[in-house]
Amino acid sequence: MIFFQILIFTAGIVLLSLSISGYGRLINLTIKKNFFLEIFLGFILITFIVTFVHFFFKINLFISVLIFTLGILLFFFKGKFRQLRISKITDINYLVIFLFLIPIFLSQKYHEDFGYYHLPYAIGFIEEKIIFGFANIDQSYVYNSIWLNLYSIFFLSDKNFDFLTLPSFLIYLCFILFSYHQIISKNEKTISDYFLLTTVFYFILKFTRISEFGVDLPATIFSVLSIYYFIKFSEIDSKKDRKEYFFLTLIFSIFAIIIKLSTIPVILLPVFLYFKYFKYLNFEIFKLKFLFIYFLFIIFFIQQFIFTGCIFFPSNSTCLNVSWFSEDNINISNRLELINKSYSSVEKNIITPEEYLKNFNWFSYWLKRNFIEILEHLLTIILPIFLFLFFQKKKIDNKLILNNKLGLYLFLILGLLFWLNFSPVYRFAIYLFVTLIFVLFIGKLMSKVFSKKLFIIFIITFVFFSCLKNIIRLTKVDKVFLGVIKIDNKYILNDQKYNQIRKVYQPDTRRNLKNGWQGRLCWNTPFICSYNKLELKKKNGYLIINK
Picture 1 (cartoon, rainbow, N blue to C red):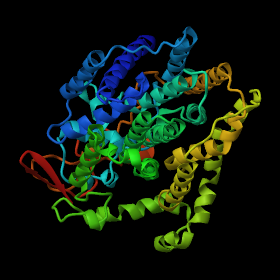
Picture 2 (picture 1 turned 120 degrees about the vertical axis):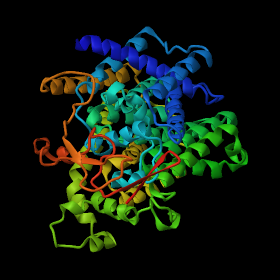
Picture 3 (picture 1 turned 135 degrees about the vertical axis):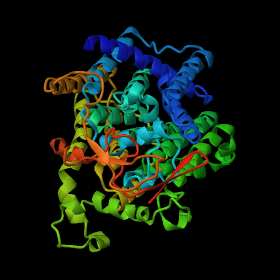
Picture 4 (picture 1 turned 180 degrees about the vertical axis):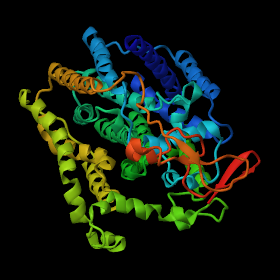
């Protein structure tokens, strides 16, 4: 039975990839695009469409099917079918990589935030068109990730959420295959290829569980793509091609930021390029395809305003006096800062939250709690590079030069300072640490003769390790299936009086004790699920939620 499901899943992945790629073909570039680049761009365009449509309609199954069907039509009618065939051996390796990564999606252990706000947020999209004051339901919606908007089109019938994590899995799979394709498709290696090598080794080894695929990973992937095209820009002399790489650097950095605010430093890369090469990039940002980036950015912040009453991540200066604005949301940044800086590890009454955040008082507590985790991740980046270098022959003549070093160094320094000051959680800075290790090791990597055969052996070995790790995990579950292991939480009516617009529910924590801390989360409790006291109104067909 599971074998038949995997066959259907494989066919579904192919059709879904064609559909997303179809949207990516709408963004015209003069450089040669491959199938995976089209998928990355397609994800951005589909996210824009879902976000815009949700302003006027709830995202039902009909809209989801329509979006995917249109994508497939675009794929076949917007240009000729592009095959990825490079050689027989590489064709086989694409398939091997894909098959070895499938077990990640089987009987997934949920991400820690899945039942907290990922799933309830997506349910809100299919239950109502955009809601004014959506953030009043729970503090986790104050700053939302645009990546979660995508989840709403991955529901099956009857709100089945087995495939809600599919976009995160697919973007991960595409990045692995994209990196593999870029590195082996040409004989002469470039510095950008070594950057992908550093990243892809780490990604395969570290991200082996779907529970690790929150919104952090998609944000990291698009940040890495922005860095990659920044390096590509620096490798060529053609102004025509540089303009296209500048566009890709900008669009991927913007998308990473609206997926996860902690990736803000990545915007420094396109800004650096724009001012350094202002002579021929000055009017480039006014071209039609750049307008799409601005519309994407604007529509996200319109959604933010509708959700919170604030244009930017809640601050008094950008909040307006609308009925759904709640001052409680202003303090969310301070609470998050305490969480990110490990205040929970401090014994009670030793230091107040205010004093903890002053003058780097938090640093020693934070370092004590996070040092081992950061070290483990750094070793996972470094050790594969050491092994790869060990098995390669020395190279005598090396003409490769890392250009625009200043921009990359400024990005690393300012990025790490931003991370340390605002959100010092390792997973928020993966793109920075990978880039740091790359910069430290690029000299050694370029001093060796690149072995394509050795690279393939490493990739296949690493994906096999990922597959084996997941097979061992699957031997310990009761049932092997495609999808998420579900938590069956009971729920009750929120203890307050409401009009008949909508009922408000909350988890029945007493009956959910068997589910541990997950028993306090909403999961698929009927919408609206909230512990807060809410006032519900409806105006012109739109739901307004006030605190």
